[in-house]
Length: 314
Image (tube, rainbow, N blue to C red):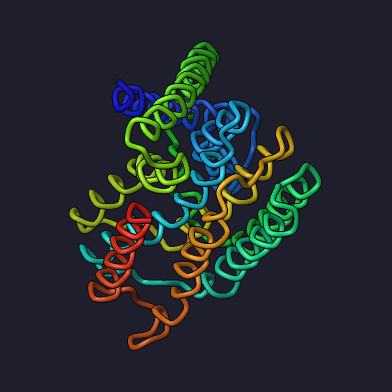
């Protein structure tokens, strides 16, 4: 029955996330917020809502390993699984903003998270507040530097400008309810599954739960690559990783401190996350600059498979 709860939870999170994104963008248009701000803040916050609800629900339910594992595992999956498979299908071009802003911020936040967790084996309120404050600063810098860039604007659906107030309210209610029940069922299913399989909650969260929350992004990226359309940008994936640490863990720990129950999170998982993040720089510059081709994508994906096997083997 645990697998049923996990699947139902993931389906509801996908549905809830979609309705929340649409309602948030439509509401932003009503409030006369510019498209560049909508694309970089409203859409980003809304797409991080499923991970936020899962981590918050897990922390409140006394399952901090799922709260941490969900974020760390998702960050690993975004690079190893989503980026790896997409690059194998269609090579990705990389812009200069990747190493000038996005990548340094992601690495800095990843390292800061490690030291925050290592220092007291808990992510406390003020640490979460510092992470969230860094996100606000990052977004301000990003919006200013991207004023002439249309990539964020391209993500905003213009048709949502015509949405009625009634539809917005209905979408918000559907999205909120789906995210609430989806996160509750997914956490419950993950805890039950870990018990029945005889593995830790941490193992389930950094693998199955993390892959589950990355499936919508993976599906969209693969479809775009197969159609030879503009596939995901590396910047979007890096941005998602930044949001996972600064927004999801930041807000969650401000509401409920997150304890480190499994030492493997600090001795294994977070180093995999740091490794996948760090390796992007040599891959981007060598041997062919500013392109992630099929060979590089294959290497990243193989490394992700090794991560999965090593996690279950321990």
